[in-house]
Image 1: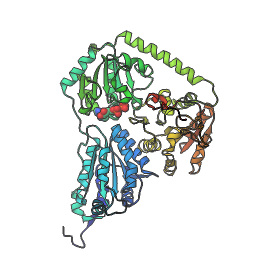
Image 2 (image 1 turned 90 degrees about the horizontal axis):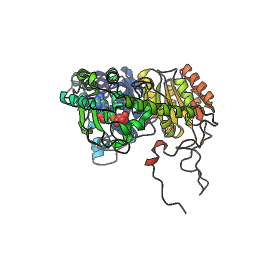
Image 3 (image 1 turned 120 degrees about the horizontal axis):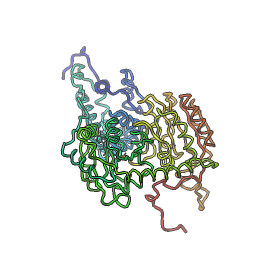
Length: 567
Ligand code: ADP
């Protein structure tokens, strides 16, 4: 287009920000640098909150958590090549967890990249991203920024949510076009996550199967938490009276103390249920692929999911119900004749008995008087404090720290627990915590293994810079898994060993946060209570027995141990 010298122009940077604003984006998580520094500045100037991180992976995890919590795509902004690559694990993790997220990355000069002539931060980012995402797009001219961002948003949130990559070359950000043309090219995506109404016959088939059950079970996954259909789910569970088992990030969808919760009788209900209704949960490794011996070979399955391809992925599904969970639960409630569903007393009694037995066993472990603290006694202190702070968002990663905390610390509200998720990944801690604080405005407690904390620990500076009410508790047992392994072959520490003498509390003091050292459950409880009262960034170094825990936590069977002893 010919432009008169006095005509109003708009550049790609500004159009990008306006396109995000038009689609309701309120927050960007990122790390600035060439070529997107001014994009962050422009966003901030236009009222978008920009949260700047120390490393892109944590920014990406924050965007993913924001997506999970809000149901709108979380935005992560990265620089070209290395920054882009640093963000990619978070984008892949978001895709794996079905969280809507868009990584927007600046990139270098196309013509030089494509001829591999050695540009500054040269990388074919679009193609590098593709295997890890639900969709990937590049915008090659400024008048396409509007449509590009609309496509990215739709791809991230519609159907099964996931990670989307959007490549913005520096030349497009720099380019100018007439302002009128630019503004006219903006697109506001209408209804980007349209309802998927389930077929009535699929609903009837599922309810018929449920009515035939003698030992029915509902499994709630993080898809059910994501769907924000809390009332409908609760009403279905309570109207039918069927016991439910929450996957870890679905904890709190119904409170963990709910009389129908079968969480403390997990192995019993998996092994004995004869009709299982999966709501937003996949039969992946976390559910033993639906296979015996963990599950009954004759159990029948109902699966509620947005993605038709999920059906029969691991085991035949007798009644697939394809739709978004909110629409499906509404359809179930409409079609339900409660008198048709019975939960035989023998089944309820078996679950009640096993629950009582396991709760008593757990209580003995929690009340043990041991020095130093172990995972159970430290988590009892955490649990007692959090019982009085139900608004708190809980972030949790580690091996033993994850496994013990998931079982010991109950959740009372939907979407208040964020953890290692489908991959069992380490490194989500500070990013998830920052997003939870930013998106909710509520306090956050991050229960971190000492090894897990190391992957994103530098972000405590970010927490202090934005003055976020996040209390990080480092469960310091001095190692990956445990801290007591010895290397008999040289002076080097064993591969699993970290410094047990570390004073993680002193790290946060360097940035103006409050540090606490806790050697006993009492000290830990007081420190946590005090930190929550202060509402300021804080870190508690909780000293745990280095012999506590097991290698690989609850995943010992996945660990490979060599059969040959070294000479
Ligand atoms: P968990 O690890 O808690 O068992 P998964 O991540 O394995 O949960 O499963 C989540 C499932 O929920 C995915 O299969 C995804 O397609 C589905 N899902 C996510 N959001 C929705 C939604 N709004 N409606 C229907 N299904 C959804």
